[in-house]
Amino acid sequence: MAYNIRKTKRLIIYKELLETNAAIQFSVDSKIFRVPLDDFHAYLKENTNVLNTSSWIDKGLFHWPRPTKKLFLFLEPYNITNEVDDEDEGTENTHWDNMLETLQAYKLENGHCYVATDYNQTNYEVQDPLVTWVLKVRKDYIERNINSNKLRALDDIGFLKWTNLKQYFKPENIIERNTLIEALKNVENNTGD
Image 1: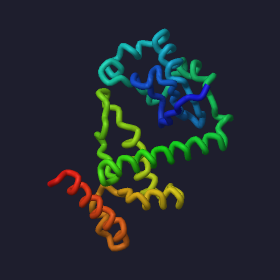
Image 2: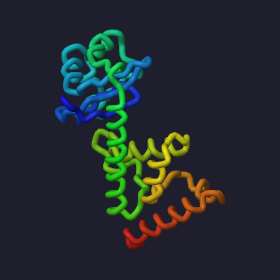
Image 3: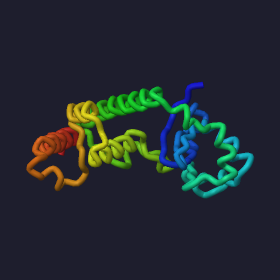
Image 4: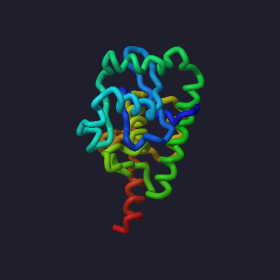
């Protein structure tokens, strides 16, 4: 069965993703796991007290800094460490391209590519996937962990690479400064102020 995969840095379960054919992919100790959230929810319901915690009840999420030994026994059948290959690379690129299209649609609607961290936030304080993606792309850009094709695609739509204004006023960043100025003009035009 094909799942909508949500990659995270650690094991986490989201109430809003239950019954959506979603799976969580994370790694611990150089092992990679991909766990269908509905299976994981059923396990937690039968074997733990997680679904009675304030984090789950109030926010609709629960995460583990490190899974317990008992939890690892449940996770072992979902170990995909040896299965990760070029297929996942293609999935990641498709996800990146899909998120770029989402950002382009956001820009068409709002006139700029600045996505606020509280954009489209749920009642459970879970960030919109676009916010998460934009933050990751900014981090990748700053750490120079982004390939030239992706960088060019971001430049083509006027992606704002920094959230700190002083970066835009460095002499070597004149193109980015002009992009920021244009984005600010678009914000002003869209709000009518």
